[in-house]
Length: 357
Image (cartoon, rainbow, N blue to C red; front, side, top):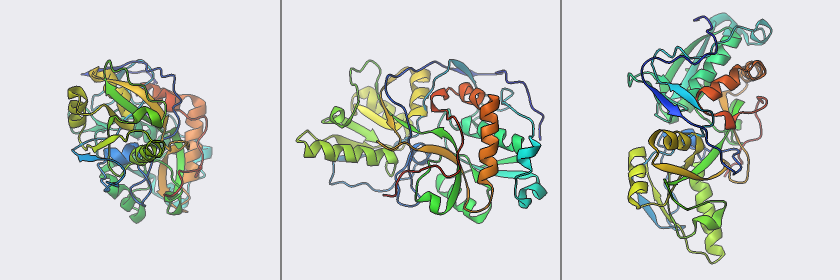
């Protein structure tokens, strides 16, 4: 295991500026499911999971799109070099490592699965366009360091994350996975972020989204099979029941396509995870965040490390997370990637999840 380095943000090569985003809207939890019929959130959308949506609820235009979005907060320089000299490392805590099940004490390794998709600043490709870096990976390093384990990070598709944890190929997955009650039937979780969703509009737009009525009659794009899609469809039904004009809902799987659609006026809003929305706002200047809602709509949810149920690994991971929360290393990682607003006060094992649909 490489030795810890000071928590200073050193970057070589290209860096991307990420500035503070201050929204007077409540940013809470976001997330969902693709693996068990539950709704989907940040990671789920980014991975391109495409479940067909209910065409009867609103006119649907199918395009290609990416719905992974983050929420940036701190003014930092993002280190996008493959070396990641700015990665924050910590020392082993023997008392926490001692709580590991025998399997991991003996192997000395932590096999971590991450999503193989570009959803900055959660997961993104470094300047070499090959190495995956980002907040999710740095959080996994903090956990492995605290537990005294050598980390092995492997990228894979969204769908395969679940199958690989099932099979034991990965010990844990760190990929912006939202806790849901359905997922808790098969997996144990250790939370490390709140989940929030954002509405993006073309820069300079006067649209403000505080609730369902604000999207009535607008052209709104979303990722298919995601939690945000479920929220949007529910809002649209509520509006129609109230006699309001339905939204025109379209679906995208490629970020470049929905950004072009926003810029050209073919869509008024894009609805996706907050972190990537902030990143796009700060790095392109072409979009504004005009509304933020909890990832579960009215229900808070948390992002968590996912382990096989009853493996005994979730509790040590939560203990490691709580240690780095208390030490400040966790906050430093979130600040590095501009995700301060998604910080939690304490990691929980199997916190309340989004209800099964």
